[in-house]
Image (cartoon, rainbow, N blue to C red; front, top):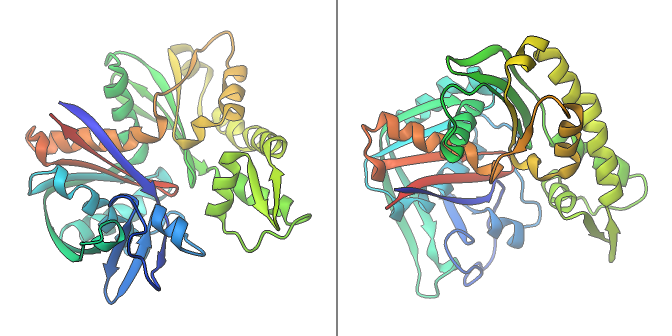
Length: 342
């Protein structure tokens, strides 16, 4: 039994015009119906839309959550045996507020998803898929990330470590011990979106950005360049400057405020996770701050760990029926679903 993951960008836009034969497969050709409207989701929205976006940290009662939830379900349709055991989560900053609405939403248990397969299949058609959710649980995102980290790295239960997750909407961190989380050390604050907003302010002083939204700017930020007014602008130096400022003014103060010398003394490793862990400007800054007394490691495939942790939690609540298990991370940057394969 091994884990597998699928991911798509957490953006969508109302569909207009012809979308036939515009993608190579379902994952890249997501066109979902909600109420009386069709929506392009993920890569299809980025390619075929004009202003594909979503609300950051959207409530489970908002349209953004439901569209991404349906898109995630349809990608797992042929991977699971029903009824499904599902786990999803939220950052500490929204967990206590969103947990009850999310449970109320999942309590419906039966979900019908209508989607258009003509986007990737000339002989396709509008189809309907039914999903039955048997068991479900909503847990803090950092807890799911730690579960995923322990499973991927096969960490011993006795190991004490600090986990820091650099997400788009939030940065989260905590200390994990053999007994569980040290809640005094748990924090949630501004994520990479903070940096992207500063990028927009800086670029707007010199360039016309053609009304690019924060998700489009985030993609340019990751690539290290942006194309506007028929010119390519190199962002690498500005990216380094903005990420250094972010670490100095947001990340480092959080680590000083929430972790004591006693915590650092008992900590064996600091693990960096989340999509922001791919930026060497951030990871190198953490390594420099703790150089000489605590090892700092970037987790493998750090953006997938929350979804994998949710999957293993689903296994726990499903009485170990692995073919019914699904982990769903509806992140602000990417939505990632995990499932077990033989």
